[in-house]
Amino acid sequence: MQFDLFYEISNPPSLARSEHAAFGQCLDEMVLGEQLGFGGVWLVEHHFMPVYSHSAAPDLVLAALSQRTSRLRLGLGVTPLPYHHPVQVAERAATLDNLSGGRLEMGIGRGFSPAEFTAFGIDMQHSRTLTSESLAILRQAFGGQPLQFSGQHFQLDNLPLAPGVLQRPHPPLWTAAVSPDTFVWAAEEQLGVLAGPFKPWAMVRADIRQYRQHWQASEAPRTGMTLGIFCLPDGKRARELARPAFEWFYRQLFSTTLPVLEKLYPSYEHFHDLGRFRSLMKLGINLKLLELAGMVVVGSPSECIDKLAAYQEAGVSHLLCAVGAGAMDSALVQESMHCLAEDVMPHFRS
Image (cartoon, rainbow, N blue to C red; front, side):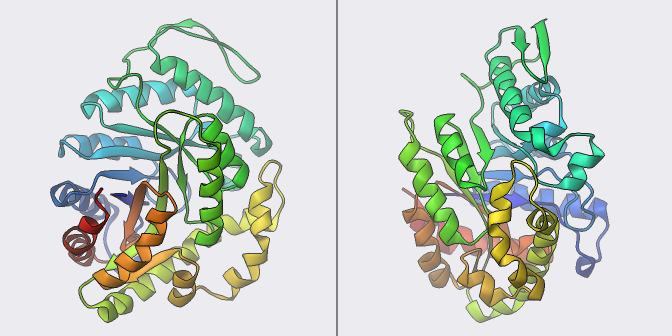
């Protein structure tokens, strides 16, 4: 199981830092991640979520990171395809692949925020068809041939693209996956899946089982799981420090998903299936509940090793670690990164 880093580039008031400092500190942590042996870095793309996420242009952050590192895989986790023209997505992805020397991991998704769809003038009910057509165009673009496509949303006539991707046949392709149907679709499309942290681990574990059962490609299935994690030699200290940060992060996360849970949006039925958690979310989130749900891992190295074994056994190949959940002082994040690298990660190397 590979350990990667995951970032929203949050900037909670408790940290009292500027946006400029937030970007700088996150980049410093990512560079440290390469030195410590983490495998990659994944950035989300979110809009109109001040405080919670400043990662509106993740490819620019990864481009900057590509010039300060040489080994880290650089993951877009994910690009919401309905918000962008697929030709521009292909061009920017290929540029990043070249700048990084062929280290791009290309994650795609539908997006989930009604506010984002409204602001960008996209009808949410078309998200599936937009994503499907955009993915087909991306694959054709990565193949190096002029684009020729006729669909419901896009008409492209013999367009030559430059630059081309450096990796062959193309950068690894991933998709965000929340609903069970998406896990099955990802397997059929031979895409890696990026899961969590929207629902309890028991539900995600069942989805991963379905994904692996439907996987038919000769290469091994790729499963990424995003997880809030904080590990220190003193497990009690780790829990005391993690409690306010993790509870803040998940309150912010659930506040962005509740609008979808409250209303049945076309083609987003599974979010509504999670509606039985609404009362729980509204009553309040606490660290103990998050730990019981398998949505965070906090404690000493031995405690974290015991908990993380379940994710490896379920088939998680990439653990996307939100160390400190983006809401802790950078010095503490780096302290935990050292602890993970020295005392936890060696237990999961194949």
